Length: 344
Image 1 (cartoon, rainbow, N blue to C red):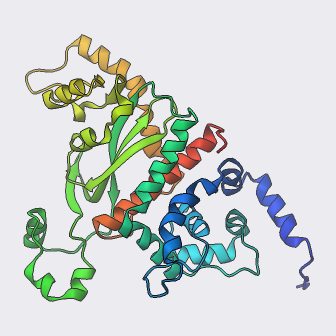
Image 2 (cartoon, one colour):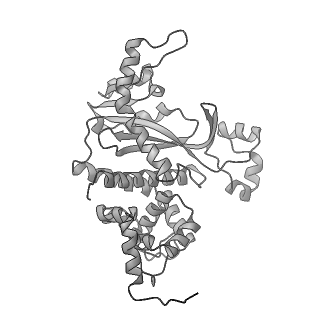
Image 3 (tube, one colour):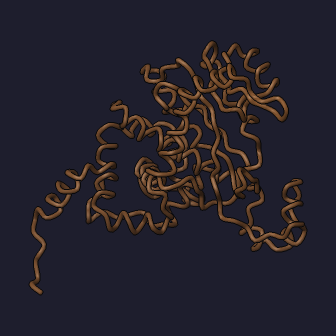
């Protein structure tokens, strides 16, 4: 085999070819100015820059580390796979502004940085920072909202029935408490639930989204066994006043209607039929009309399942899963803005 030597512009030529393939990361960089996230990151990390003893303190620029988490969440890969991919792929390096001679954060640094964000709730603040900017620029239409929830599955636990029963009652099994190493490997917050004959283990991502733009404007994370409707009230805020809210029949109840009326929100919740009291033709017609808008929320979860390679998490405990789901929702919003051709 003929041996070839590396030429001066080989890297540039290869990147040009990648660009012709419509590299999603390059397009994201073209439309999103990630500097909008620097302020909250700087506010937290800068006071600790000299605190060398603080666990999880990033040794790299915190905006670079945040972009790594976005990249990781978009491709849904582990910390080890992320480190390898940054070293291996020119498109990843270009997205992060790294050259072949630059140092690359290792998997432990990535884990520490994400864990630091999780422990102080900074992911939620970053989500709200983006939402505030989108509102100030008039990108969120506020012509109506839609709500839904989807499972975020986590690593399944090999627990006994008795252990699962205790966890459901909020009790940590005694032998777990006696064995700290075992307890660290257990998720005491995730729950089992069943839907349409399928078993799920983990959590739920409850979202509220703008009907026109399909931008997520609020979210909440709960164990998987929490009913879809239970997180709705906390998702609604003053900006939703006088707007219609669309949701499927899982959200239908007298309590929901009273709550929406109290908040001065117009209900577009699907009507529900009951045993021996099926929906009338008029109710079915109203539901079909509502579905034309409500179905748009399914596009959000569809993008997460397909383009973002699934709504799964590798983490245990509510704190870390909340951060993981928050990053998933931020990543979706950023790529949705690209679809809308909005430049930030």
